[in-house]
Length: 360
Image (cartoon, rainbow, N blue to C red; front, top):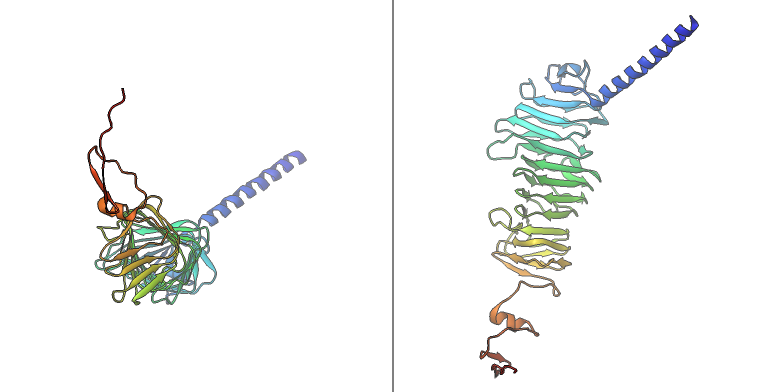
């Protein structure tokens, strides 16, 4: 009898352990909490403002959905030290989320509708590889704004890659961290409207990316890689602008815009003082100004050119290959293939080549 009791006790202990693991797993996955604004205020902590949250306000690991059918589009995060999964906008756009800082591990999806923008004004950390994507496509503007006027910070920690794909984003938060902000997929775009002095990571622009750094310092000290078919627009309030970022360039941009397209306050000079590396032939567009490279230049056998402006490479850098008389003038040692009987003029002396008799 005791043996059966012990066996039953062991079975119940094992069952309890399994249930504990399952509950723990379910908690780790998180609930999908949809904002309804059914409470008496707009706070995250008000349970009546949510549905699908297991009868509570959102907790760590939950996924947040903001649907435009809610009675209020002004949620306020009054929670602290929260880490949520993903954040999704659906239905009519126009949300403006404010309040305390929070972290996301599952990315942002904006599938909103209409011509208004969804905005996240909180200090936001994107931890772990994730994406910012969606189908929201308002007329005449970006569908999603992360921050307004630099009043918040968007942090991408070291080791994290955040990929913006198939959507336009206004980055109105000051970028921070040492992670990677990548743009890929189908024609992603972004406007960076706040200086990013604390961003030491990387910008990677894939084919089709159209990015506008609309303020001085928007790139921080990050490295910048621009693939063939992508363009980075830089708009500066200065006449003479120096960028110390490391640039890796390829291609001629979008519709011959140049891989790097710079507009200064007036005709002046863009100095690239950091290293510049080519992975294919590339062009920069200074819009009538001069482009001067003073850092390390690695062409890898490719050619860098400038349109509607001038380009000055470092003294030791190879220039674009020349042909004809220009090639004779710029090369002290030449190996020339000439036809029998042709004349070559060198240093004002004419030499006539004649055919040698064939050896017998």
